[in-house]
Length: 230
Image (cartoon, rainbow, N blue to C red; front, side, top):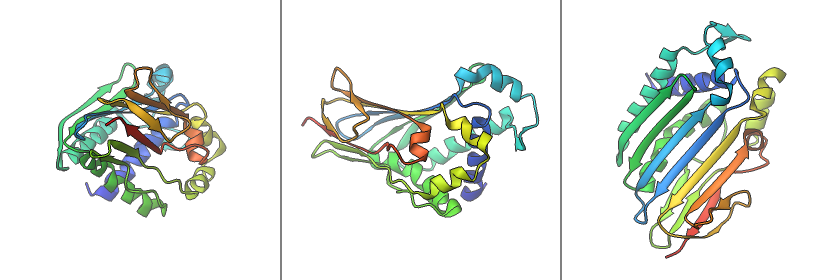
């Protein structure tokens, strides 16, 4: 499947799943070693609405949207896994699909943060091309000399326009949705730039949880500059 078609498939699949519930969470976890290697885990958690989703998945469509089957979801996870396999420096790729609780995960190890950044670059380029948006294709960077870790995010006001083109009922599904990131480090965190993020009591992790709506409307950002102790 061509990357453009893959991205369209992922977008439709993700959007179809979220239409069934406003209670979902996207969790991004990164464990970073001092040399820039580490591991990443992305979790798509719909467990708070598992009963509703189980009922909906018995149907063919809801409100004009096709209900993804288990085969559709498994194919998307498999294609994502195959995409990771094409990226240099990415290893130990794993995926899980829990259809009892509707929790889906994808994880991998990376040799350096540049490898991790490459995971998302193609998908973001296709998003920008398809929706004529202008999101930054750089997501992560790490300077091992200065011990500085960066999470980039550039908001594009077009995403708000795309959002308001949705039907009112479809927009409501994002009301209780959240995005959470947890970045863990071997060295202590000295400072962070995102005022909505928090440093863990042990000083070796940074936690950020924000509402999906605040991201869509540009009220909050996932961007963060994290300075570690040398």
